[in-house]
Length: 240
Image 1: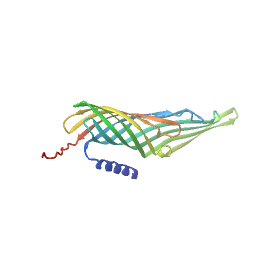
Image 2 (image 1 turned 90 degrees about the vertical axis):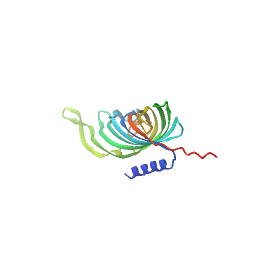
Image 3 (image 1 turned 45 degrees about the horizontal axis):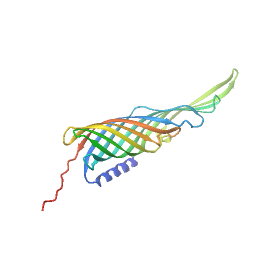
Image 4 (image 1 turned 135 degrees about the vertical axis):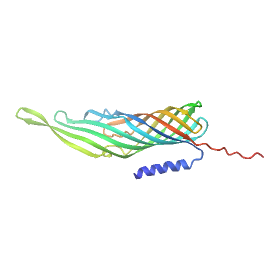
């Protein structure tokens, strides 16, 4: 909670220090992460890190630099659900270990980006930038299974011992991540003050959440939202 408050305070401090604030957005949507596995992880076979569809909500402030150029600062809350399976065989068929775990965890992300806007009433825009995120909270549940070869009257057999797991997600999940993001979308201006938009973004995370054998991660984000535009009075010097 302390990390969350510090990040929000930093966001508000940056926004309040910049003159010319031009818009405020709220967004919600879905995230679909994809893990890029490390094939060189030792002693590992049949492993997977499968993310279910996760949800996303955010707020953003945009600063108008020109008619076509804006700068944005986006604060988002991301919920993730990860099904993790890992089979480790020190001696295949003799000594094997299995992790079968489900994670449910939350991240808070801060994304800074420039945005180019085209057309007028129906606006097409693209943006790109960098983001950083911190782990907020989460849980993990599942099983740890150990199998060891034993000898019986009828020959060798595998004996398995199951242990239930229940704990905090960040025992296995990274506390911090960062990456780059590219987005595009359509914005429709309902009035001088209100607009709605549909946005699609892609993220690349060189520091994935799961650290056992995931090499990197990509995410697809689809969201809808609304924007309130702050009108400013142009200050003109009186003519001499």
